[in-house]
Image 1 (cartoon, rainbow, N blue to C red):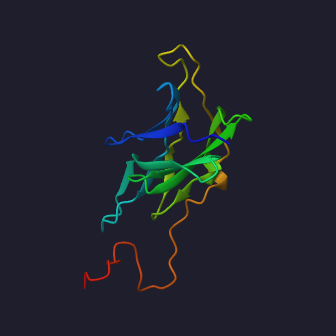
Image 2 (cartoon, rainbow, N blue to C red; image 1 turned 45 degrees about the vertical axis):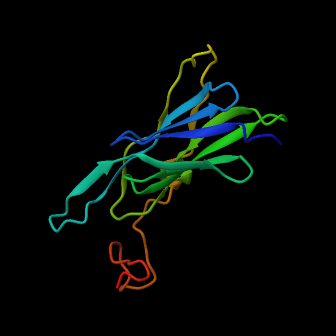
Length: 160
């Protein structure tokens, strides 16, 4: 199936959190999503929190049925489900809230993911929808196998 003529485009901006999907042949926009605004424990002694989002990286999985999104500042991994016709053309893009996985502590949803409606520069309707529920997502505190291993205490080999 020829699905690789589509690209995900990360708009990496402070608190931006945008990911676009583009047809590589026509250069036409197919969809534009804004990822979840996450709130989490900022790690300070005063118990402060931080609310943010941005897209560091996104990519299609190996069979083209999903786009995996790294919401870097939001400390989450998220997913857009992709449906295609028999020729590999994208027919549906659904941001799946239930697939969200948090990788921080004290996490909560401040603003849900959204998508943009309208037409691209060629007059074609943008695709997009949101499905699932954050109630089914895994945004609980990151749990590690030992009390000695905590967020922020990891070192790369040779760093000691």
